Amino acid sequence: MKLIAAVLAGGKSRRFGEDKLLFEINGKPLILHTIDRLEKCNLIKRVVIVASSHNEKVMREFGYEVIVDELEIGPISGLYSALSLGEVLVVGGDMPSLIPEFIDYIIKEFNNSRKIACVPRWSNGYLEPLHAAYSREFREILGERIRKGKYKLGDAIREIPNVCYISIEKLPVEWRESFFNVNRKEDLHIIT
Image 1 (tube, one colour):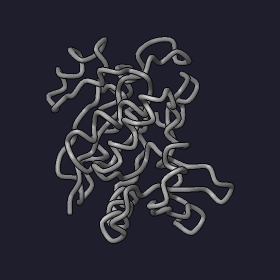
Image 2 (image 1 turned 120 degrees about the vertical axis):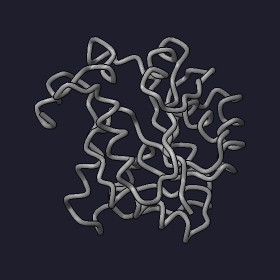
Image 3 (image 1 turned 30 degrees about the horizontal axis):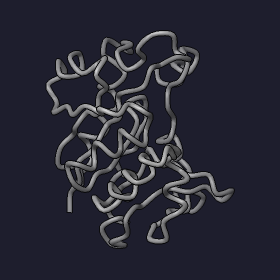
Image 4 (image 1 turned 90 degrees about the vertical axis):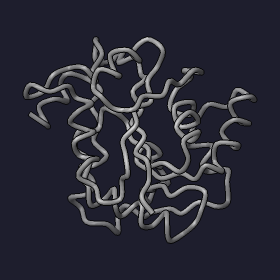
């Protein structure tokens, strides 16, 4: 089954100094580099941008469906908003090095496992929750955590028993570049 790709685009880009998703690299905004990679995936049915109220208008100019994260409390509320659409593969808009084969692999594992979430995990336990697939069922769990003021997405994932973890160290090494995200302008040299 193909999933919706939800691209989180509501961050404030504090470390970058300006809206990094609009920063042009090779004549194209950073977020469009991320979306281009997603559009090369075989198991993505459509791309949706999850924007904040402050950047909704400019995100709509790219021609993709946009939903607004009304809560704006971080990735947890962006994912909560995206899950209103159904099952999703979520990534950050600042991830221009996504590997389409890896994205398809995550979706296949998610479909085969039928778990609430399918999340890449490093051997030290660190999760990659913004490079993962989620069932609509997870929305209720996130909503409850948000109501309680618990905003850490990783903690929400760790607390549910029904998760498919993908061991990153067992995957092709070159797929690891898929996790790269731009935080500072110095990071841009990697993709230019």
